[in-house]
Image 1 (cartoon, rainbow, N blue to C red):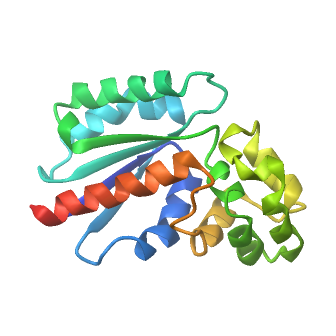
Image 2 (cartoon, rainbow, N blue to C red):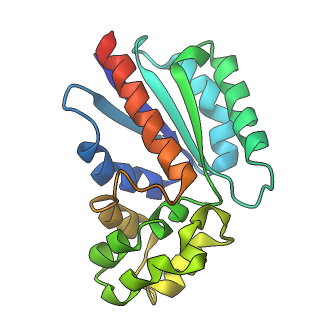
Length: 191
């Protein structure tokens, strides 16, 4: 069975994937999400979950936030080490959302405006602050302010996932995330 397993640090990422993945993956790929209780729980238990996973052909994608850590590569290395410990590192990919998952949303304010019924924010995408959202500090706070409280982590992520532009290139971390999903799907379909 072609199975793509997402190991996630929070429920809002699972909510995003629920509506976003059907738009990017073919029906031949089964998706499973495993949600942890934050980044530390994910770091402590990812290797064990991957090692114990019953489908030997599954592919794994770990998605976590960079948060306040100044070194994105350090965060990624930490999770790649966990993949090595699992014994299945060749089937794992790690992707880091620069700062927070909400960076993906700030890269596509049209999607946010449509999903959350906030038409006033569509025109703000061309402002300098939103042209490179990966560099923003506190994206979740900024998104809540921008939407005047309409954004809620789980329900907002689910709704925004329906409209995110798959080809959006304003966020390098989003582009890398989408690229990793496509590569893993290709690997699974080639088996």
